Image 1: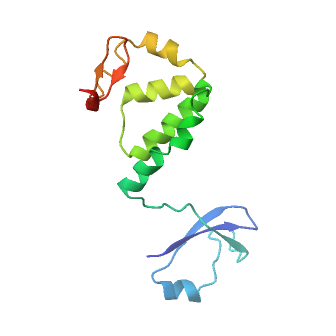
Image 2: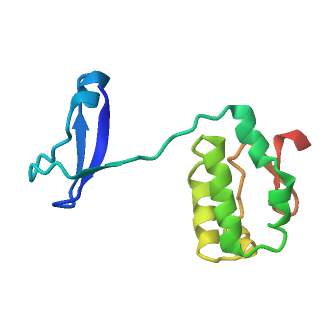
Image 3: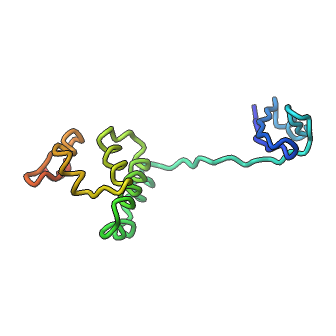
Length: 139
């Protein structure tokens, strides 16, 4: 069943009207269920765009985007990490979310790393001698 979002210009209420068929929608005059006004404006909602795994990974691999992070402040780094996490499409765990939240609040990466000595140990990689995370491909 097709449904459409409207804003009533009389009472300012947002309403969703549902029709049995597209033909019913074409023939109907939308009416606000609250005030019975026909002065409604259709609202176009957000659109989800499906992406392949390959296109999501290509976006993450954009080296130009990484260049800006070399001298970035912690909040910018945190926003980039949050975006990367969303592009992966999987929950990266509580530890990842904690690091991102702390970066976005402006905490330095060094302070975060020193307060989380086992950072990345449960991420499928290993912690090297300096305390940094080694990926599975390093082994």
